[in-house]
Image (cartoon, rainbow, N blue to C red):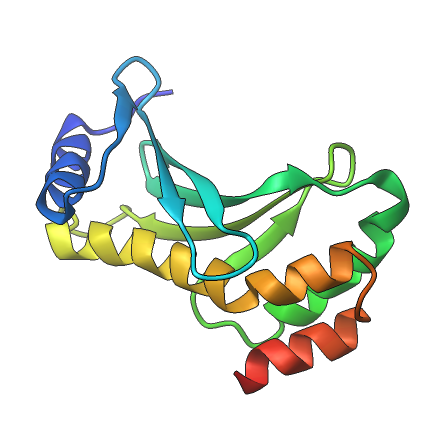
Length: 155
């Protein structure tokens, strides 16, 4: 799928400015990086996909949810998403992959700034960090989704 090379340039400038290490596949318009988080989900792989009309940023939990735990995590994702202003949690019910996604719409707007691309990444990382312990608690059966989300939102 096509993407705007100018957006790739701005995105790479943002990563360079922050001193973040990354790889970029010009053929697919995909940037990949890894970040440390201050929660029990201590590291997250992050992928940014440049499309013609949108920039998609996915910060992934570094594990797959076991099939028997997916119903609880699905409830967690639904509860956590309620009221979020920036982005959303997603879980692939077939694979158990969980991520937090932020987006930047390119339709009818000028090119994004370096700062906007930085905040796209920081937003995804921040929410995954804020809810990371709660997600871990639900996956490991220590808390119900309701308890875990309530606690995450108190902190």
